[in-house]
Amino acid sequence: RQQSASPRKHIRSFLQEMAAALTAPSGPVALAPAFRLTHTAVNSFKGSADNDPSYIMGLASPAAAAAAVAVAGSERELKLYDRATLQCTRTVAAPAHADRVNEISFAPPRSAAAGLLFSASSDGAVRAWDCGGGGGGGAAPSLELRGGREEVWSVSVSDGPLVAAGTQAALLLWDVRRADTPAARLEVHTEAVSAVRFQPGSATALVSGSVDGLICSIDCRQTNDDDAVTGVINEGRPVSSLGFFGPEPASHLHVLSSLETLSVWDLQQQAGTCLARHDALRREVDMLGEEEAAAGAGDGIDYLVGCQYCPASQRLYLVAGEHCGTLHLLAVEKEGVVALASLRGGGGEIARDRPRSPERSLEITGDHP
Image 1 (cartoon, helix red, strand yellow):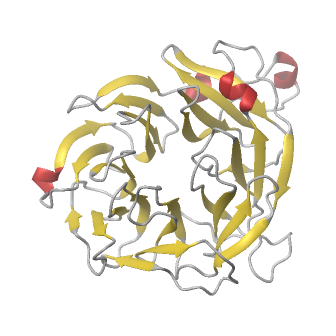
Image 2 (cartoon, rainbow, N blue to C red):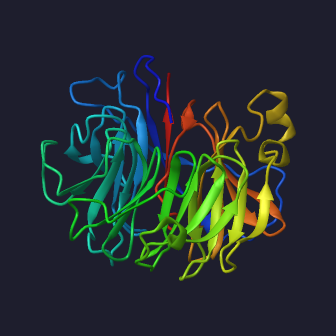
Image 3 (cartoon, rainbow, N blue to C red):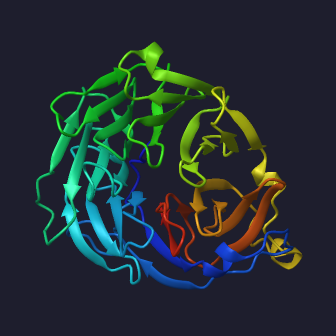
């Protein structure tokens, strides 16, 4: 969560065609096939050159078939990029906040705030932006949500009027129709709330993950802490990200920890059932062939980027990376994690994020010290 004060970071964004991998049969492979890099883009802030660009803090896509990808940069700017060409089509806001932008997310189509891009910031605000039409970066937000001065780490929008945010000390809920003050402040964790996600298709069902290692299922119709919590999962490790997956109503959860572990849960039971736990992915999966390993091309998996679910194939995918910049696409199966393909030669830096829409393509970002 910390942003380095070192010189500007060099950012690269990759677009990889993944249709073959998304429909490929599962099974172990000795060496994952490499994808072809189609485009590279540098996200620069205003007045900078390509050799002094902006560090990417997050990506978001409004829908699987959307032509645009939103990018949040370290200079607190929000931009839209064309998914096919990776050309910047619009600067939504520059700056969008007074402090670091920690996460961005589009409201779902059935939301009361449909079409708006939400940004969560360390300045204590959640803002909503209209990404339609032109603009030169000076546009005012369509909506600003505040509940104090606490840093906001995560934001999620329901299929109704509610917006949730995870802050340094609490979980905040707003009704966008009456957004002057939070509808509820839930102190259900003992440390920072690092991730919040509404259940797809639901206006009130929410999960929150925290640095305290707990995941809470929340009924947002309740405003009292005890009544609002309908279930608790002890992940046992600091939660860095989480998300629902499966056919609607999605009842399964993938969870990544700051210790580079992955766990999969079934939330149909109140206490949650752990379906799989991968605590040693960096040792379990060898992504290299003997020749590449001997040449020092990489060491397998060094870190986890995130998970994505493909409704067409009904499979959960994991994106992982190496410190040298190589990325790997893996399928999360009942029997374990299966290597599908590798993305080599796209850059030499660490990947940070990816839009949550794997049906067509995948964008990955990297930093350069």
